[in-house]
Length: 346
Ligand code: UDP
Ligand code: MG
Image (cartoon, rainbow, N blue to C red; front, side):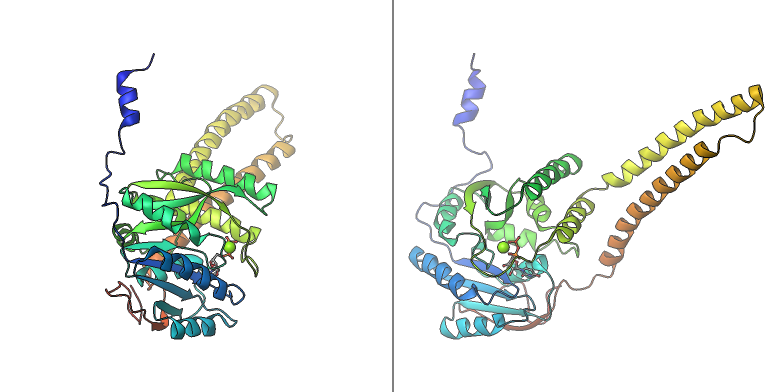
């Protein structure tokens, strides 16, 4: 039988939602970090500009050059010269995608901000749909991949387990199959830019800010051109980054493992003493001795390594270095001011 409360709940809207007016046209900033993307940047600009000009809104495209070694920066300068709605943020070196994206977000001025990969894996054609959801009152509209083309079985399975694990051990609920592709309201971007940690596990940070959020399923295309910068070693480090920056569960595990081993050794010690007293054979037991020593050595090294992971992160955070440095910025004509400055944004 259907409970009346349950059916009522189904018909109710998300309670924290305040709808914006239906015809509202906000100013839009699109942010895209780029590292060696000379093959796709021109096409990226064309597709994004086509979508944005169709919206009839004022917009800017914030391109972040993350220390590219090819013609990416020259292309960005050319785009800025041709279209004053393009902002170019040239970082002083390669800082990695997470930081490049944060630098881009710091330099946006729009009322809504859309994050895209510059390799065209995220279709800019979805922006109008995202805006419709924004008008319903959502602060964050994130794309979730329905199919993962061109990825191996191994990568899909490990990714799946990783998200399940991180959901179990940390309090933030990171949506599955979700990348950086999303539309955010100004207050979501402002909240995100208050998180200045050095170790930037973006999926976790995106989830941490909360606010009314909505998933928008989409088909993630393969790269338009060029090569992915990911490999399994990077993915492994990414997983460690995700876990260590959002939970201290591994430290607890090593505590409990230590307790368990201590209890077991106590029982075993009692057994050994009892045997020595009854049979008085003190020399035998080399294999068991070796097994115990090696096992304990292993457990101790793993625990020390775990501790080290966290201490290393503390070390990086306490230095309080700026997240990035900007070599040069070419600003778009979109009115308003952004949080970042040309020198840096601490
Ligand atoms: N990227 C970046 N700095 C880097 C590596 C990548 O800004 O050090 C950018 C890259 O240009 C692209 C996005 O981050 O726009 C995603 O990178 P990639 O396509 O290599 O990753 P994947 O899509 O395979 O996860
Ligand atoms: Mg890509």
